[in-house]
Length: 184
Image 1 (tube, rainbow, N blue to C red):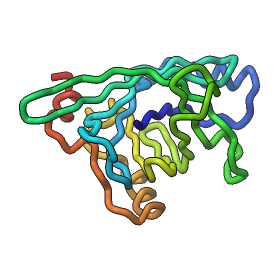
Image 2 (tube, rainbow, N blue to C red; image 1 turned 90 degrees about the vertical axis):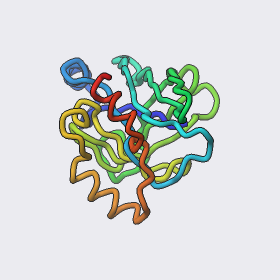
Image 3 (spheres, rainbow, N blue to C red; image 1 turned 180 degrees about the vertical axis):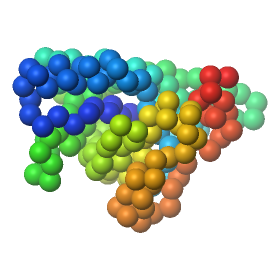
Image 4 (cartoon, helix red, strand yellow; image 1 turned 135 degrees about the horizontal axis):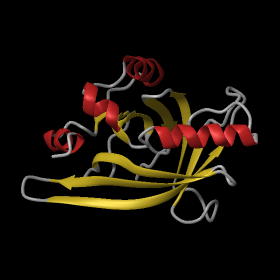
């Protein structure tokens, strides 16, 4: 399964940075939706309309609890699935001055191997591009942006195409996903 938490970039880890980060999360809607990825889902049914529903940040551990939901949709049934994962950021490579990797755990931080590890290639206020061995490249967009603009920001699309060189496998192609964005 795919789970992501989008934390704004911070240059250094001081008490002022923790305060700034908490203000950003408090001021903005922390919901993001997976729009497309470079690898097809390996499991059936696919996780349609996958999105985060809440992110609770811990200032002391620089980690977050991420709530998510998705739908298993077919012509007769619609099943809404909810869950929670624990996310922790890491500084994995020297290509970035801030944390650039997110690890996800089903339980407490760093208990057992992570469910998934995603490298953050790009992020801004509207979207994030990640890469992982498990899922390939993924583009997540702020749900409120999708609801109002009904498109993926151009920068994320361009960077996805440059970095991945692979076709997009859409998660939000089902018409029911559009209804969920508008609150129907």
